[in-house]
Structures are given as C-alpha cells and as structure tokens.
Image (cartoon, rainbow, N blue to C red; front, side, top):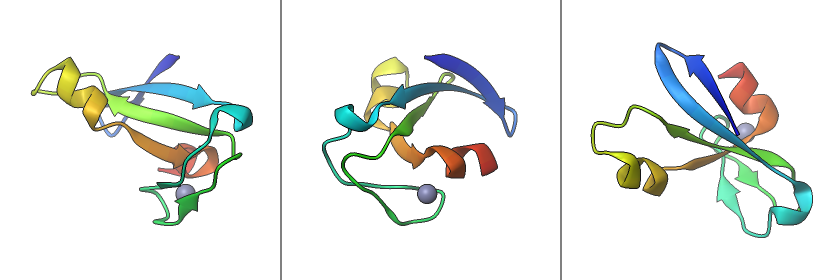
Length: 70
Ligand SMILES: [Zn+2]
C-alpha cells in the first residue's frame, strides 16, 4: 500500500493483483466495469472527516490507468 497526493487530498492506494480481483466493480474514472481477473487499484481517502471506518466503506476500485490519469 502506498500514499499519494492528488487534488490536495491524501489517498491510500492498494494494488489488487489479477488473481485477487474476483468481483465486478465500477471504475469512477471511466464509469466502466473493472472485470474480475483485472489487476487494478483500490483507493480511499486518508483524511476522511467521517473517520477511518467510513473511509474504508467508501473505497473505490479503479483501473490502474484511470487512477494515474485522474
Ligand atoms: Zn477506468
């Protein structure tokens, strides 16, 4: 896991390997599905005003390229 700053916000970014990706997610970057079996990243805010539990509940799955371009 690593920490990145984007748009003035601190984010935790957790890579997900292809074999770990077993569900469909909707990528917030392109609004298309992150297919099972696709290596991608899970991203959440480090500074959520609602606290860590809420931040974890609001994790988002991004295509790796979409996150880089976000
Ligand atoms: Zn995407």
